[in-house]
Structures are given as C-alpha cells and as structure tokens.
Length: 520
Image (spheres, rainbow, N blue to C red):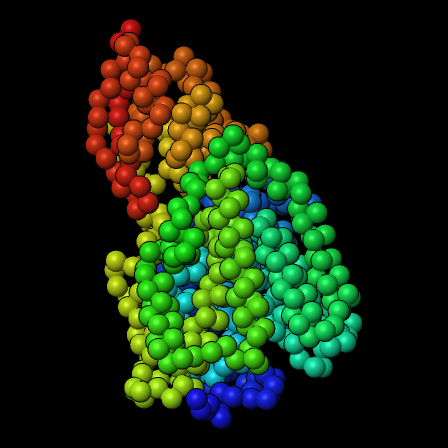
C-alpha cells in the first residue's frame, strides 16, 4: 500500500497549516450559510420554540431575562441568552436577526471542524465531507433558519473536538495556562448550550483520558479544566428542573427502535446517508484498508460517539426518550470524521479504479446539492408566512374563538393579539392534556399555564369550565385528527351541536375549523 505525500505526515501537526484554498473554502461556507439563512428567514414567521426564546431575550433587563429563563420558560442553554442579548441589541430582534445568530454559530462550527480535520486530512477531503454532512443532515440545515440554541450546541461540540485533537501535539504535553483556559472555554460552551451537553462533555473527558493513557501520561490539570465546565450546568439547574417539569408526567418524544441505534436515522432524517457510508466502508474493506496509527485520536473520538449513541439509546428505552434529532446534532461531527477517514484511505490505497479516488468527493458534493435543491428534501417553511391573518379571515366574524391547538394558538396570539377584537381563548385542561400525552398534550398544558403565570397574554388562557360557562356559541380550531379536547368536552356532551366549517393548512399542520353551539 502506498501513501500520497500530500496526505501522509510524520506528525499530524505538520500537515495542519491552512492554505489559501482552506481560507477560501471556510469563507465560502460561512457566506453560503448566512445567505441561505437570510433567504429562508426573511418572510417566515417565528415558530413556537422561537417565540419562547424571543420572549425571554426581550426582557427589559438581563436580571429579568435570566430570572425568566431559570423558570424553564425557555429550554435554551444559558449561552443562547447571554450571547443573544448583545446580538439583538446590535442587530435587532427580528426573525431574520435571530436566525442569522444561529446560522453564524453553525458556520463557526463548520470553520472549527475544518481547522480541526485539516490536522489529519487534505483540503479536498475535508471540504467535501463537511459540505455533504451539513446539508445531508436535515437538522443541521434546519438550524441555519431556526433562531434557537442548537447552533451554539454543535459549535461547543466542535470546539471540544478541536481541543482534543490539538491536545495531541507534543507542544501541549504540558498544557500552558492559556491552553487550559481554552479547554475550559470549549467545554463550558458545550455544557452551557444544552442540558445534554454535560453528557457529551463527560464522554469527551473520558476520551481525553484514554488518549493520555495510550501515551503513558496523565494531565490532571487538563481534565480538571474540562470538568470545571460542569459549573455552568450547576448555574442552569433551575432552568433544567423547570424544563423537565414541562414534560411531566409524559413527554412528546417516543422511544427509539433498535434500527435507529444502528442506522442513525434520527440523525440523518431517513436520507439514507447510512447507505452512503456503508458503501464507502465496503470499498475500504475491499481495498484492505487498515487504521493509521497517526490518526488514532480520530478513532478515539469516534469511539466516544459510539459510546454516546449507546448511552442515548439505553436512556431513551428506559426513561423519557432523548433520542431526538436535534439532541443528536453533534453526531454530525462523527459523520464528517468517518467520511474524511474513508475518503483518505481510499485515495491513499493502491485502488484498482483510480477514477474512484478522484470522483468520490465530487460525488458527495453533487449529492449534497441534490439534498439542498430537491423539493422532497427541502426543510419546509415553518410556519407559512403571515398565516395568522389568513386564518382569521377564514373564520366567521363576531363569534369568540377557542383554539385547542397549542401551535396555532401561540402563533396567532403572538402576531395578532392587538388585532383580534374578539375573545381568543385557549382551554387549559389537565385531564385532556393527559389524554393527548402521546402528541405533546402535557407539554402544551404546561406551556400555556406558564404563559399565563408569567403574564404573557393571560386574558385568553382559561380553564375549560370557565370558557364553556361563559360562551355557548363559538368557533373552535383543532388539529387533525381532532384534538382530545373536542372529543372529551364537546362531542361526548349531548347538548352541543358541532358543524364542520373546513380546513386550513398553515404550513406545519392541518387545522380543522368548527362551529360549536349549545342547544339550550
């Protein structure tokens, strides 16, 4: 087996110098992500979770903002709010601004991974692998136009991976205070970006220890600087408790199937990226590819992700499922490293098909463009632009409106609360929430209850009994199939007549519109 001199090095650091092509590639990706975010955000309304984050960010003072965040009103990590506050002070709190904030974090994560992977792989390998994974993963593409904390989440994971690889240089065998500080900052960004960041951080610390034991050394100060980041999680305990309470006694997620454990369908959205990686593995095996000693840190990181996958799976089978695409976003890093390794090994091998070595990266880029452009794979606009006035225009005039669908109620209230000119009500009903637990009824109940408790549009959020006592003739909005509230409180009561008026599709779910009348 021969090795290309451009890809082989005596020490990983000797090939890590960035070239002009690298800088151009990073700049191109950054510009692409920001432009993509702008084009997808400029005429799209906030969706529910973005509204929650916006309401916290727009608090008049940092103290009131953090107080509201600590209640669990918004589940974003602390860094989203600490960093987001100066951002909106400079760029405003519009939909575009908040999503560009997220897109910039995603772009920064790509840049960090590019720099980290270039310590071991050639530019064309890194570029094609990053572009493919960032577009092939629906959730990563979604975070480019979603004003939430998940861009910071994957950025934190990328920074930790960079520090792990950087820590293998001989120059860091005795870490300097600056290196220890950088390690603490990277791990803190991860643990403070998401509740589950501490799980990722714990496994990555174990990976660092494993690498050091292989090198017959212990760097206690390095492990302590990483573990010190758990203090950020301690600061977030109130928020974590409040967030967990929102999902009690049931959450909207469902346990993963065994096929999810081996296919990572949850990560890649059923886009068959697993097939792509499997084919590359098969090619590598046919060429008798073997692990490269100089890239053992890469294999250690991939082992860490494999362990994390098993931990997520087991926890999700035994308790509330956390095997959710956005919670698994950092697994995109593992996919990038796998592709980089396979492409490099195939390129370096004495392949029977020389054309294969040069066309595989190009094929990945072409496939990424297909995912980006094909209508079937596009991330949908959510919700439909300006759907709230469209919805209100379809309703009969004058009658009160009862909306038992949390998603649509929240959108209309947020965008049209000053223009309703008639009662617009949400029925908080614990028994109905339990009936609808499998579709997020409990979370919706807690969310609306918290809206009222915090003083956000409290007049329309009322118990079912109070609404039915005051209003005997009203318009009802439900999801499809009809919500548990309609079935339990209206259809099961003989003294109501219900007339179906039609449907409306705002872009994220189909809504049914009914007229409800009390016979007496």
